Amino acid sequence: MEICESIPCPFCGQSSEVAIDTSVPDQRFTTDCEVCCRPFEVTVTCEPGKILSLDVSGN
Ligand SMILES: [Zn+2]
Image 1 (tube, rainbow, N blue to C red):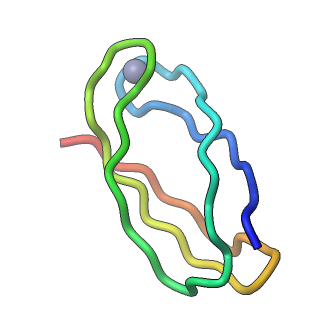
Image 2 (image 1 turned 90 degrees about the horizontal axis):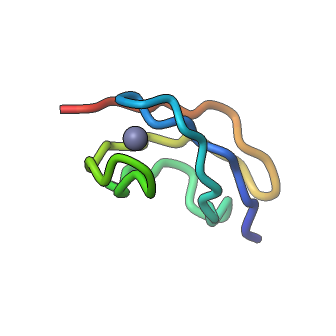
């Protein structure tokens, strides 16, 4: 099950919607900000249908 989550960019603060597959309990991926185009890393912990924690870190 996928959930659309609004994730804030650690550089410019702009939130963007990212689809997260909650069937994967621990995941980490890199996404590019749509506004400032800088890549940042997202770490997500979830259980099916629910996001437990979400961390964002920029390099
Ligand atoms: Zn940004």
